[in-house]
Amino acid sequence: MIENNQNAPLLEIKDLSVRFKTDEGDVEALDKVSFEIQAGQTVGVVGESGCGKSVTAYSIMRLLPRPTGKITHGSIFFKGKNILDLSTDAMRDIRGNEIGMIFQEPMNALNPVQKIGKQVSEVFHLHDANGNHQAWSRSIEMLKAVGIPSPEDRMHEYPHQLSGGMRQRVVIAMALACKPKLIIADEPTTALDVTVQAQILDLLQNLQKETGCSILLITHDLGVIAETCDEVCVMYAGRMVERAKTVDLFAHPTHAYTRGLLSSIPRLDGVPKTKLVAIEGMVPSLSELKPGCRFAPRSGLDHSQEMLEQRPPYLEISPSHWVEACPVCFNP
Image 1 (cartoon, rainbow, N blue to C red):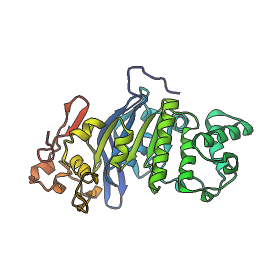
Image 2: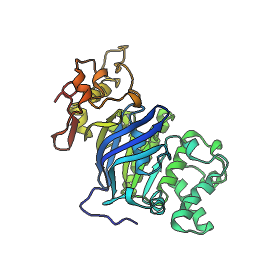
Image 3: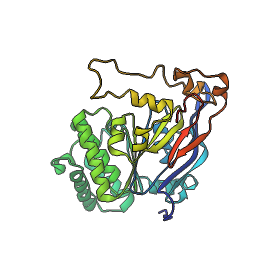
C-alpha cells in the first residue's frame, strides 16, 4: 500500500513522455504531459483520436505494450509516491485495488469464454484473499450496486449474452470492486446509445459520491466534459495544449484547438440546417510531428517555419488555467 501525503494531489503527472518503436522508427506519443487530480475530483481529458489520451491512461496503469512502448521521461506520483519506481509486484497490487480502470471496449475487456461471475469474483480473490463463497456474494452485491437487474442470474451468463450497456456496467463493477481511490474511465460511453450513455455517467457520479473516489475521464465528447468534470485537459498530438477548470475553459477558450473543438458542438440556439463547423485536416502522424506548435498547420492562420521548429512556452495565464502559448494559436 502507498502512504498518502496529505498536502499532495492524489495523482500528479510531471513532464510525462512516452515513445513507441515502429517500422518507421521511434515515435513520440506523449511529449512532456503534466496535470494533477485532487482527491474526490473529476478531471476530463479531451481531444481527437490519436492525441494521446489512452496512452496517458495506460502509462498511469503501467500497461504500455512491451517492448514497443516505453516511458522515457517524467514521473507519475500517486498518493505522493512515484509509481514508476515500484516493482512489478507492487504495481500489480495497486491495479484494481487503489487504481481501477474502465476500459474503452467492454467486449475486449471481458473474457468471452468465462462467465461474468468468475471474472468479477477474480478481482476479490486477487486483492482481498476472499474465499469462494464470500467473493461470489460480494460480486453479486457489486453487480446490484451498478444497476444490473437479477444479478444472481447474470453471474452465470457469458459477456455475449449481455447488452452493451450491461457489459459496461460489469466492467465498472470490476473497476470499483475494491473501492479504489482513483478510477480511470477510458471512453466509458463509446458505442452506447444516448440513453445508456446518460445512465452510465449518472452511475459513475453516484458511485463517486458514495465512495469519494477521484475520476480521470477520457473522452472526445465535450458535452460529457461539461456535465461531469471539475477540470479539463485538452490534448493535441501528444501534448497538453490547454488545461483549466471546466467553467473557465468553456467561458474563455484560449488555444485555437480548444476554440475549434468548442465551435464544432451543435448549438440549440443556432440557425436550423446550418452546416456544422469542423476543424480542417487531421491529427498529424506521430512520425511527422514537429518540435514546435503542432496545431498551427491546421489552424487556418498564418504561421512561420520558425513556429514549427521552436516549442511554445506553457504559461499559466490565470489561476489554474494553463495554455501552450504559440503566437498563432494563443489568443488570450
